[in-house]
Length: 143
Image (cartoon, rainbow, N blue to C red; front, top):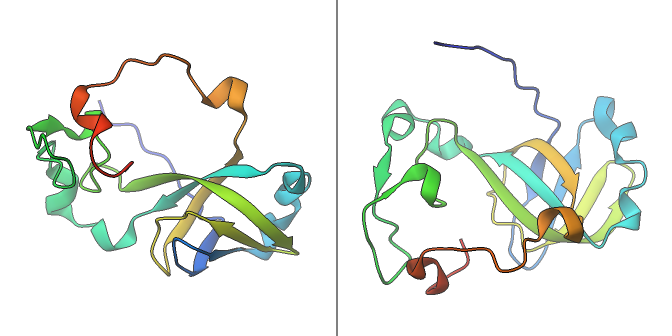
């Protein structure tokens, strides 16, 4: 069964960098930022545009390279950029909001990456105490 949908990018990563990044929201979506200043952290979903290749979209099994255990893993059980829909997700610190521009810290997207969505980080909804994870996820980088 194939279901189709339409994705509307709401902005773009204007300046990339783990230390500080700037996300520009397109004018027609700026009203959606109302109230975002009240949050210290937000979740940014972005399109990994440089990984949007048919071969990578067909890949379902990978060896997570950044992790010491490096066991074959399904793409839905890891954070591999190779996946059917190259959507990245990152929890970032919201530093500043200026009109339609967000300054954030900790974004792992590249410059030019289209923004799919932004959600507030709400600890009681987004943090799961005592979540079970495979041992390999406790070694190496967080993503």
